[in-house]
Length: 169
Image (tube, rainbow, N blue to C red):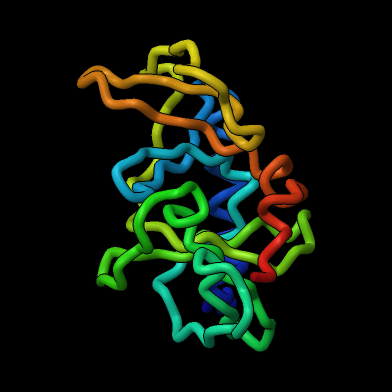
C-alpha cells in the first residue's frame, strides 16, 4: 500500500517535476488572469494556488490589502493584485484563487487573482518591448498568437518593493 502524501507535498513534488521538465524542453510558467491582464509566474516562485479561504479584513490598511487568512495554521497576508496594480477590486467568485508565494521568500503572503490559466510555455509566446515605463516587478512582456499581452511577474522584486510593503493607510 502506498504511503499517503499531503496535498502540500504533492503540489511541491509536482512543481519540482514540472520545473525540471520545463527546463529540459521550454521555460514553463504559471498563467494567471488578473483583472483584464494576463500574467506569468515562475513555478519556483509560486508556492501553491488555492481556492480563496475566508479573509479577515485588517483596519487602517490600503484598499488593495484584503487582510489575512489562515492557511494550515499559518497567517498569510492577502493582496488584491488587480487593485494593487491600479485596477478594480477583484470580485469574489468561484474561479478566484490565491497564489501563495514560494516558501523561499518567507513572507507568508499571497496574491488574490481572478483565476489560474494553467501552464504556458514561453517558447509559444513572442517577446515584445515594453509600452512606456515598466514597473520594477515586471520582468518581461510577451504576446501570444492571438495578440494578447502577457507580463512576467518578478516575485523577488515585488515582495521587497516599498510600494508593496506599505500596506498601512
